[in-house]
Length: 223
Image (cartoon, rainbow, N blue to C red; front, side, top):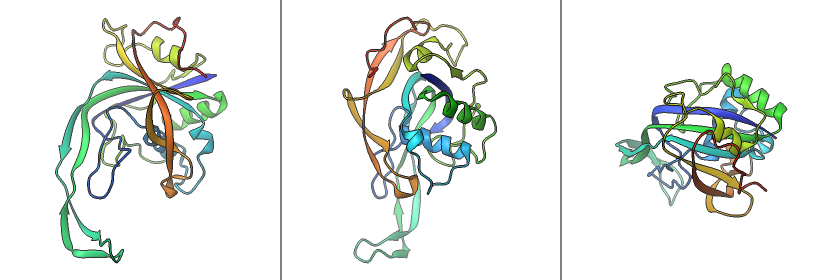
């Protein structure tokens, strides 16, 4: 198995998984649905197209810099009326939008090398603009990493990559989340259909701490 590494850095990021109605949440780390949506934008894959091949990739996240949770004040008009399902153009509601400020993440996708190589090439020259969870939240640094395709498995690749902030091995351990087939906390961000259908299922994620450069440590979350 090979691993593709992506850099997600920006002044604002939002990775919602449980948003309902007017309030939009964000997780503390990138969601799988959000990352694969970014990949689809790079590939030029329409929202109505299947994403089974992308959904089968195993994802991991190394937190380089924890984001500061903040709330953006927004209003919305033309809100749907629950009883009729029609928009009310005279009604304006406050819509709280939560986001992470100044977060930096190293994301890994593990799977077929051919698929990862095509994604890597697309990230270098994306078909559509890339965003960090919302269209207005653009990356401050390229998502593409020139040597981002690694022959190592997911955990080893995340452990071996130098710090995105300094380019060196950090002196403090990094928080890492690795997808697991059957154990860990549940995240409702696993695409089970084309994005146009907005259908997502559960997946398991395990969290741990390790230093970069610790690629010799076996992966306890591997299948």
